[in-house]
Length: 263
Figure (cartoon, rainbow, N blue to C red):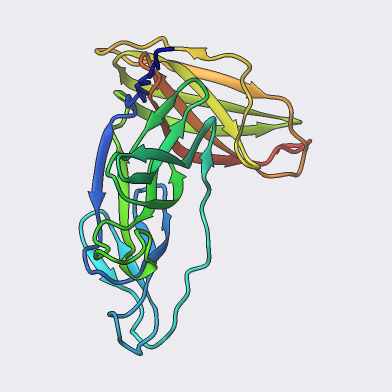
C-alpha cells in the first residue's frame, strides 16, 4: 500500500497592522513589562550578568529609555495590565519549526486570529492596552542554553497603526439612572462604526455596531444612552472605532456618576 504524506500549510491572518520595536538590547534579564494607554512601557531589569546588584525599574516613553531607580534597590514590578481589551485578546501559541517549536504572540479580535510575531524564538507574557502590546522575548540566547533562558529576556512593544478616524470630542453626561455618551469626529476614512465599552473589565454595552456617518472630508456627531446603570455609582467608558477591514482603535476613557437629583 502506498504511503500518502499530507503537507498542511497553516496561514495566519496578519491584518493587525502596526510596528514592532525592540526596546532593550542588553543581554540582561528584562521582565514583567506593563504598557500604558499612551504606549509607554515600564519593566523590571536585573543588573548585568554576574553582578550582585539588584533589580531596578526602567521606563520607555516612546523615544527614550530611562532608569527610574538605582541598582541595588531590588525593585520588583508586580504583574499588571491585562491580556484582553474589549473583544480583543493576546496570547502565546506554539508554532512548529524544522528543529522544534517556538512561541509566538497571537491576537484574536472576536472574528479572526492574527499573528503578531514570526521570529523563531520564544516570546512570553503578552499584555495589551489601547492596542499597544508588550512582551518578553529571548532573541540572543547563546547556543547550549535553553531558548528561554531568563537572563537574556528583552522587551518588545507593538505599536498599532491607528484607524483613520480623527476624533473631535468625547464626553459622558450623567442623569437619573442613565449616562449619555456623545462624541464627534472631524473626519472618517473607511470607518465601519463604533462600539462603547463600560468598566468593570470594559464590557460592550451596544448590542450592534453603531454605524459610521462621517466621511473623509466631513465628520459627524453621535449619541448613545446607557440605561443599565445605578445612581451614585461611578462608571468608566471607552469608545472603539472599527474600520472596514476589522482593525480597531480604542479612545481614552471618560467617566460619569448618575444620581437622582441634579441642580
